[in-house]
Each structure stands twice: as C-alpha cells, then as structure tokens.
Image (cartoon, rainbow, N blue to C red; front, top):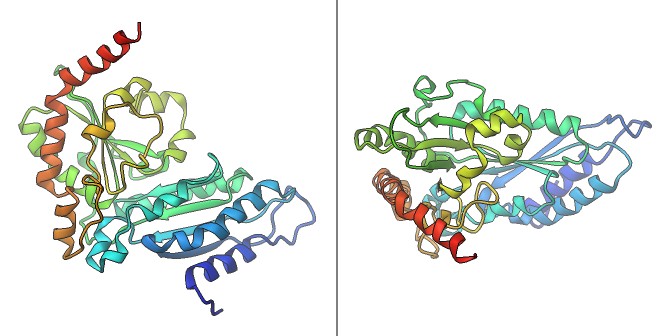
Length: 313
C-alpha cells in the first residue's frame, strides 16, 4: 500500500492489523502481530502513530496484538551511508513511553537476537500493557562471539536482559562496572578484554540487551549481575548517547567516564565505517583508554562521591 511518507504509512498499516481481534472474549486475542521497520535514524517518522497505538492498547477493554518495530542499522555505524543516517539519537524515541508499555531490545551479537526477542514476545503475549517491542540492530559483519570465554556462557543469556561477559577477578581490588550496549561498542570492548587483563584492570563487564527484560528477572539474579550500589561505580560503553542511558538511575559520575557517540556534543561527519567508529571514540584504542581511565580513577571517584554526601550534613 503506497503512502506519501513510507515509514508513517507502513507503521499505520501495521497498527491497523494488530488492533483487530476476531474474539468476542475481551481476555482472548484472536488476530495477528505485525512488524514494521526502517533505518533506525528514520524511525521517529513511525513514533507518533505508535504512540497513539500504545494509548489505544492501554485503554482498550480487549486484548490486542503487538506492534514490532525493527529499528534497523541503528548506531553510528550507519553514518557510513551518509550523515543523514547517523542513528544514535533517533532510535531513542522508542523509550518515550510509560514504563512497562514497550520492551526495547538492543542487540550486538547474532546469537542474542532469537533468545532476546522471544523472551520479549513471551512477556508481551502474557501482559496486556505491553503493546510494542522495539528491536535495534546494527549491520557490521562481525564474527559471532565466542561465549565460552564469557562469565555467563549461556547461549540464551540475552533473554535475561543483562548478562555478565567478564566478572571481577577474585582476590584483586575491584575497579568498577562497565556496561556495554550496541554493536561496535560491545564488540570492541570484548576485543580489548585481554589487554585490560594484562594491564591488571579488574572491571566487571556486562552486556545490556534490554532493561525491560532485566526488570523481569528474579531479584537474586539482578543483584548478582548488577547490585544496587553498582550504579554509583559504573560507566557505559554505548553506541547510543549520554542523553538517554541504557539503564535508569545511574550515579552522578557516569556521564563523566562513559564512552558514547555524542562525546563531543556534535553530529559526526560520516565516512567509511572504521572512520565513523573512530570519530565516535568507540574504536578499540578509545575503548581501552576510556576503561583504563575509569579504573585508575576509582579512588578519586569514590572520594568525590563521599565528599558530596558529607557536604550535605
């Protein structure tokens, strides 16, 4: 079906499909789910119809279908196509919903996609308020991750929302938590882990696939992966932006130490993929230097936090 603006027209058609049910029982849905997708940079054209749909789903007495948004080629990598395709701010519109009404998924490894998506689908099928699932993916031709080297080698780990790639080395001083989200960001962080180990940097590295999936995990698992106090001792390595962190309620110093594509508060210029990632400061050298700075500054970071609290008394 033709539309003047393809993204808005396509997502509206998908909404028309998922909003219909052949069931007379309000608690039973008899209809379809639908996918609609485009470049992550252009998905804001789909946001307004989806926002109205989310409210319709919330207020309806009947169970409805689920709208799936594929924010394809999200992240700085897509600036290799053109500056207009720079997809780090635009996909963040999909977090502009009441909590619990959307599940956001941000994948970095091929093998995370199926378990992460089907975990989200299971929740959406069970909980009426979840009307939208958003899938962010990039397109770099990376090798599949060797999960035998991960602290959590479970092939289905993405279903848990957050999972541990590298845990603290016992018996050594801890240097903080590093949370990775996005494609090149996570891939390059994993690639420099041997260098960090050689430099005696003892950080816990966590892959953030979905905060919403993580919220559905048992408390014991959440505390084992990321205890409450960790947010005060945390940095991100993210292909997103500092405007909207992968996790909520992080400490006041996270911004100062995190690595994001908007590090200089400028639009990036585009170019070859390697050039784009280097300009975004997500290349291996930048990631290694950023994590090392975070680790080496830990005594000073904690002292600053204590001083702030003391000054309130």
